[in-house]
Image 1 (cartoon, one colour):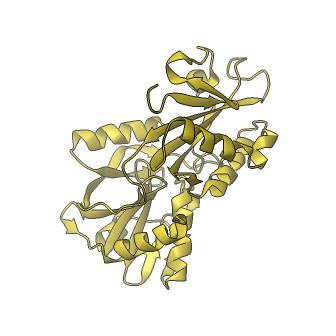
Image 2 (cartoon, rainbow, N blue to C red; image 1 turned 120 degrees about the vertical axis):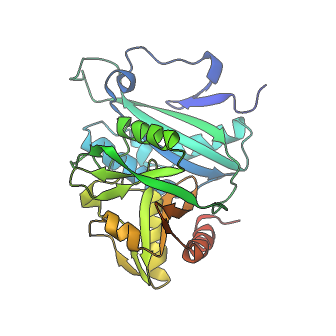
Amino acid sequence: MAVNSFILFNGDYHFKDNFGLSYKNRAFCYGDALFETMHGNGTEIQFFEDHMVRLIYGMQELKMSVPEIFKTTVVKKEIIKLLHKNKLYQGVRIRLSVFRNDGGKYTPIDNSVSYLVETEYIENHHFELNQKGFIIDIFKDIKKPINRFSNLKTSNALIYVMAGMFAQEKKLNDCILLNEKGNLIEGISSNLFLIKGRTMSTPSLKDGPVAGIMRKQILKIADEVGFEINHESSITENDLLNADEVFLTNSIKGIQWVLAYKEKRYFNQNSKKLIEKLNSVAFTN
């Protein structure tokens, strides 16, 4: 039996190769879905409770019915069992998708949901800082609108697809997205942080970035180690050019430091210290 052969669908385990979703699936037809991407390690899922809080909040915003098991430890146990069935005992990427069930056109028949969990082996058993700093630029072709869905992690991801293609074409490691006001808000799949002296800044959620789980953790750690925190203000290109350090965060990589934006070069001393602290918080062994 091949390693990583199973997926989890509504509490049942299926062989990947034999499983398929309906062509009427609302995630496919209308982007009527949310997802969480989580880092796993053996029998641990890092910051699982925070992921579930964000997922349930998003479901409520989209007027989806929240299954009772999402409010218990059942789903976590199901996912850990999936890791064992797939023989994934070290680093793993876990994607938990929730979509409204088939039926209706734009207007659904009802708000019941299904959930699907996929797993994928990754090399980083813990969070590891990139040895080579990222080269980034600003993606200006499409600006992200600010609305009540901006902070959610939905399957409506075309702006990130286009940003990813821009980065690929320009041979960049990542790029920074703008909101409709022209403020810097996030990377392709990450939150943005700047350090200037002892001040750490990240774009306000009011400006429209995804409310990242790792963003929350880094703000908590930064406060504990004595940074002055600025997470309520807008971030501009001028702030980017004046920063001492720039890094990106997400739930899979933790922290990824940026080396260069245009002619500007950045350090990574604080990034090294923060990722050490993050690992001490995230992993029990």
